[in-house]
Amino acid sequence: MLNVLPSNPEEGVGRFPSWLHRKMPKNSELIKTMGILNENRLPTVCEEARCPNLLQCWSEQTATFLVMGKECTRACGFCSIDFSKAPKAPEADEPIRIAESVASLGLKHVVITMVARDDLEDGGALHLVQIMEAIRLRNKETTIELLTSDLSGNEEALATILEGNPEIFNHNIETVRRLTPRVRHKATYDRTLQMLKLAKGRVRFIKSGLMVGLGEEVNEVHETLQDLKNAGVDIVTMGQYLQPENRKLLVKSFVTPDQFEAYRLYGLQIGIPYMYCGPFVRSSYNAKAVFEAMKQIYG
Image 1 (cartoon, rainbow, N blue to C red):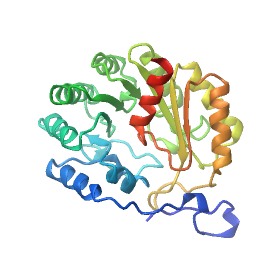
Image 2: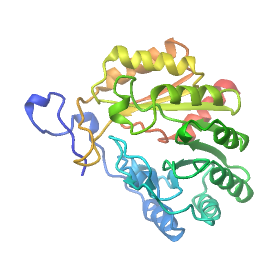
Image 3: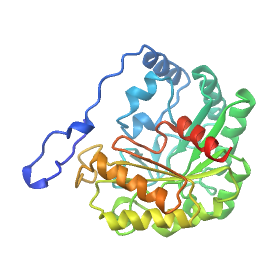
């Protein structure tokens, strides 16, 4: 159950606004997707992060794979993924299981995300490369999007990942500068910008995302969009933060669809090529459609 505050906290806990209500999908593919993931023993960020789009995406036979386990070495204020100082070692056969699932689901564009693995010397970079290699060996037409941690700022680890040549490199800034210390456990605002800058020009597209509704001001969101533009980001995703469990940060406001549209237009105005903004938007939501749109822009 998602727990949120109303737009006006003085009113007490209330219902979601109308734009945050969704119809249940009517599609038998949801069960098929679940079966494929269970058969291959693969967690997804859809489940672990309690994504509100899970039913829709699974009913369309797509999912975002969460690799290197279900325990993260960080305990960010917004995220419900389990914390562990010493998670299990990455499973050697995970790349093959992911490649088989990609084939079974018929994915033409796959998003791979990860728990932060600060316990590993390279942050898990080599394992990500092995996953990409396995996917391409089994699914030659599939394009790959990686959503990574900041690898503790390890530039050699980042270079290892980029040499694997994902079509999209994604690293989320998550929130505005002022709120970063409260929202993120270890990652910093400037380190994220540096990672994005280092990746620019080394893969086809650079992507980053942030959540709103955490208490940020409009001018702070504008500043963050300008910083992402200056870092060379091609795609920005922006969605409503929803509190995944009681221990996590409270929602401070519900951002209206009109305000999301205003943010989208502002990003385009300052030169960000593609802005995907809306209450339900998440980093990997409709990732294939976003990638196709970028190909239309750049050919």
